[in-house]
Amino acid sequence: MKFLDEAKIHIRSGAGGNGCVAFRREKYVEFGGPDGGDGGRGGDVTAVAVEGLNTLIDYRYQQHFRAERGRDGMGSNRTGRDGKPVVMKLPVGTQILAEDKETLLADLVEPGQRVTLAQGGKGGRGNAHFKSSVNRAPRRADPGQEAQEFSFWLRLKLFADAGLAGLPNAGKSTFLSRVSRARPRIADYPFTTLHPQLGVVYLDGAEFVLADLPGLIEGAHQGTGLGDRFLGHMERCGVLLHLVDGTHDDVAEAYRTVRHEIVAYGQGLGEKPEVVALNKIDALTPDLIEERRQALAAACGHEAHAVSGASGAGVETVLRALHGHIRAHRGGSEPDIAESAAWQP
Image (cartoon, rainbow, N blue to C red; front, side, top):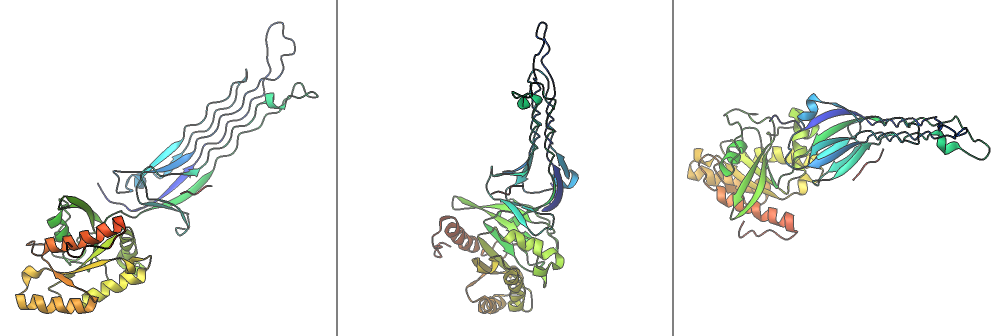
């Protein structure tokens, strides 16, 4: 299934049905009086977060959603049928933005969370409502309330326990394929990964979701290379795994480039726990591995692991470090290093 994390939609609720002007007509009843029924209520347009979806691709091909209009009232005090609503099923993690693409209206972060985007119009009152002691035969009925019409932007920010960060061609996809059953596209050129990929990692009887995000480049926080969209997916992650290509001549500078973009993006990314690893050590000599690992540790200010996504060397140690932070994020406790709603229109 093709991944899409942004889409524009146009919605319209159902208008209310018109009230009816009618009079009781029966044999031997000369003055039956008014009996016009009310109009039905128009359908709402509602968005609901559901599990099992991780893309907005359905909203690329269907962008217009219209709820049904309420039926008009009828004689014999019969109320018109309510219009059928429209329920839009969205992935958990979808944000609903105003047409200016900046104002956040709703953030669907829990399965089953529901928000009404456009309310259906109320049905008009029939002439039976207007009968009085001085007006025994009213010929007045109310029209149904008008529909509401809006345009919105949908933006998906994936939920994952951990996110892979790094420059293009840092080996993130290879690492994901090594630790999970995900099969992202892997090649020896930059920007092989163009869309986020999710994989489930099983470790010591537990499991967590790891996201492989497209590589970041300088200026990513300002939108260069769609970097701001990719960084948005990191907002939901509990911990970041920063992979640095060990074959890079200056691993410290490679780390600082990506780290600068993460911090400059804001939204709390700079405060998230980070595990740093020197990747592709299968292509380095032992002395060069240690030299570059120490340079990377000096740049990040804490321990830097040595790992190879291709051979699997050091992978388990890195996963245990990630899992320690993930458990702390889920339960609110310190990591075990040793084991290492709604908008209303």
